[in-house]
Image (cartoon, rainbow, N blue to C red; front, side):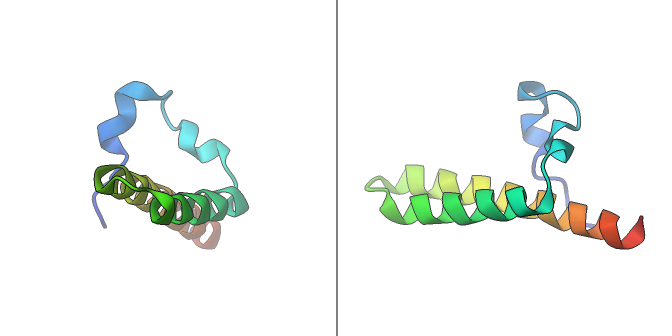
Length: 70
């Protein structure tokens, strides 16, 4: 199993609040954050957007696994 990339943010959010999103919303987050990264004029900000998108992609993967295993 891949390490949980959102673990580093656990002090900023309520526990397991990421589960309140549905699969379509995860897809939208990934899409919008990656698109925004292409609009950035500052590389560090673009890379932050991509890192955030990766986090949502991880959440999407977990949700899909739960749907198939649940």
